[in-house]
Length: 186
Ligand SMILES: CC(C)(COP(=O)(O)OP(=O)(O)OC[C@H]1O[C@@H](n2cnc3c(N)ncnc32)[C@H](O)[C@@H]1OP(=O)(O)O)[C@@H](O)C(=O)NCCC(=O)NCCS
Image 1 (cartoon, rainbow, N blue to C red):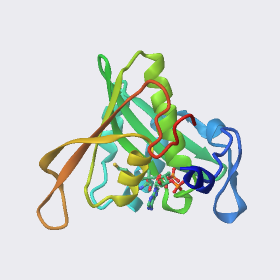
Image 2: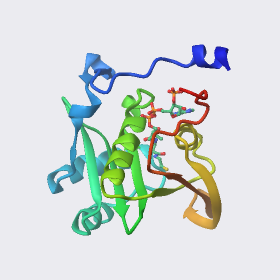
Image 3: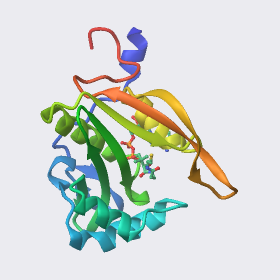
């Protein structure tokens, strides 16, 4: 337990700048802002780059019109990520979480989920749910790392290269920080 604790990398301070490609630095907290209709072209460009079955412009437009909680991460030279959360009574559903490929693995996805959990708490939402492809090892690792647990499978939920792919339903309570693998007392 002691060794595991020592082996964990230090958590980045919320305002610390994250180095990205081409010597660009982004402070995740300051880079987050609500999504606007004028962002949608850039959002859809990233979506097409990172997903085999991307959301359409209409999906994002509908999310904005429906009043879902839609956010973007603004880099100096364009958007680098975005997320969409639907909030209901006592429950929030994470519908989209995306980081442009050149900016992945810098803590930005985790930062966006933390931001959404924080928002959900302020709205007294108890639980956050999401679906993820079994084949999406990066996203599953992120969610498990942040304390999401697997609840169920939805059969043939997603379109796939060949036929359909199941969805794993994951959930965690919004209250209080819960990090998988955290040492007692941490
Ligand atoms: C999934 C995604 C949002 C993660 O965002 P990210 O900014 O790259 O992830 P982070 O740097 O915040 O990673 C946080 C943790 O998640 C896990 N993780 C993230 N990417 C991983 C990868 N490629 N392989 C293994 N674990 C990974 C790790 O536990 C990581 O912690 P660590 O860096 O301390 O080891 C991003 O990879 C992405 O946009 N992928 C394409 C779109 C997608 O699949 N979205 C999710 C749909 S459900």
